[in-house]
Image (cartoon, rainbow, N blue to C red; front, side):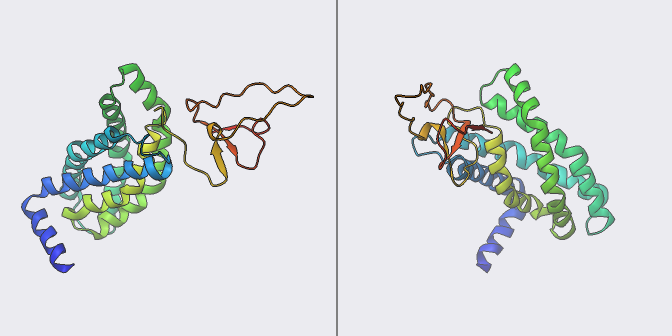
Length: 233
């Protein structure tokens, strides 16, 4: 294990941008894999490989280079260490960089999905506020530790390891409109498409309920009668 860590450190020092780009891309791709398999609970047939490749490419060619330059700028501007220096870095990172880069990321992601300018604007308008608020509830605490205790050349790696969970959320949130995208699985709940329709009785008329997989946002409790409780997330 020690030899592996030394080999990684040597490679990081020799090829800093390449190593950080590949590890960021790998972890962003892994976030999308966990989103599709664990959160959206897709089958192998439903799995979107192009989407995972898209996240890997964004991590490799966009996220890692930008973060590497940004953390280098912060270190040069405010120095290293704990206390006021770390607090200033977090204030700039979360007050200036995060809101700006999030908008850029969502725009570039929409473009790589082949969306029109209007679609991209609508998606950003719909999701930006929610994602930014979740970002602010998680990342300030991570970054204060990162800037206080982690050497500069390891900061992107630390962020991307924590971001594995963030990327899972981001992959789900930014793909809610795709045909095979489902909301997070809740124990005891099933998509309406998986619940068999009730049989009509002689004394009541039951209106037809679509059980097409094209309506994945409609979910019902597994112990409830389908027409009695229908909840849209």
